Length: 171
Image (cartoon, rainbow, N blue to C red; front, top):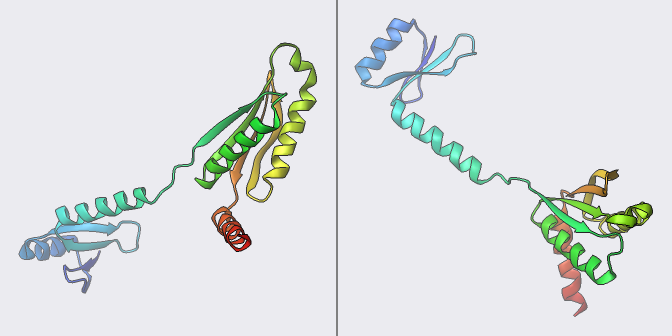
């Protein structure tokens, strides 16, 4: 195996028994770092400290991750303009938070005969939000509902920064 001492100095290729003797003299542990390498790489170090730092790096990386959630916004086929704009504003808020949004149009009773209204509503929505969304799944009918899933574009933050600058310059 290839051996590295506690000062990150390579000691060359040694046998397992030699490596264990060297580690015992140093009062530290022999830890296999890269098992799949040829020959395997081992390092002499304090395993408790090594494990602590490895766990800490893992926790830090988890903090930086963003878990994408799917937020759902429901419409009716006869949704008024004010309600439509209100729900669109909420969708934009969710997209700014880098969440996916599922738009659903629900039909009740005889409204089911006019599914074209639901498709038109979702089409209108996708046209109005075309600058900030990628359509993951186009509008599709499933029983009494029509749904569409969208996700924010990668440059959504930049888009809103530019829009804010334009608004400031106009005032």
